[in-house]
Image (cartoon, rainbow, N blue to C red; front, side):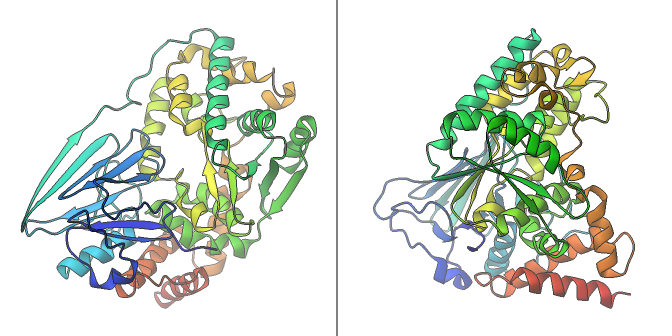
Length: 457
């Protein structure tokens, strides 16, 4: 288990962060980092670049810092400034809050509603989040500072009817998936794929097997549910050896702090989706690139699954894609803290673009959602797997309602899940304010959070 990775830029030195200082000589900004995956050679370089989430970019040159967030906005960036020349920018919400308090003697606190905001607010008062498709330029002019924030082109704003034949539309998306997987494999050593037995992860697994025969296949279950039989059927058809991973309740609870910190909020549905993969990564050997089928329901059906079809697919897709750009649920930060990398090919821009350019009428075939993809998937998967009815991710592994019940049983209070998630964020913020470079172990965060809730009874 490695430390939670974060990057921090400041207009002024930060005493509490000195041990994480990168001390560049070619910029007026101060750069700090912990476990950040890329450490460039900053000394005497005219421009230093940091990639965030794969396609957002931080560039620092002399007295100027420029941030460009992508349309996908996978990993959030947080910032704050005032009229006194203070400025901070961080990939981690808690680090941003701690740094801002260090600069200004302020006391940031967690909002009462600590969920997802579809604007520039974060779940901590006083700390802003950079929205998708934006550009922030900060220039230090002696003791003065100039800041300009603009909007860039939103690559995901438009949908079209470019692909109006169901089979061709599905094939176009599969072709984009193939290229996405090829790109990810260029930096991979050990490769794994999460499968449930459905069309989304099944396609990723089949395409991956064609390029990487020694890939490991895993399926995640809990005491409350699993899709092991469907995943096994798919693995047998594709020639995989399937490893069944059943997460115990304690491992799920202990994955909550890492998930909540990586997401930067405590919104229940997103946490339910993310906590299983965090718990999985926590017990997996380090050094793997893990492929998933996450994101397909967002871009192909607007989150309609086996429960029914969206009445207006185009509007549903636009709504869900936009929400995901703020929820951070597809960030790889929590996995990186466990020594692994995540790859969500359906959320890669070429695949997204193909899905958004598919006519809604061909996305429903045989009265089934994602019909175009299922039709084309028959060339890669058993027909049963291509057309298998699937539930949402967090229902397939049983976490949809069972996690809330587990938390209620643990706290001894009803409807306490939201309270616990927020308290976990509060405990981590309090620790970051005291000693930002020494985070608490997950066990201690959970214990303190539970004790705080117990004291309110």
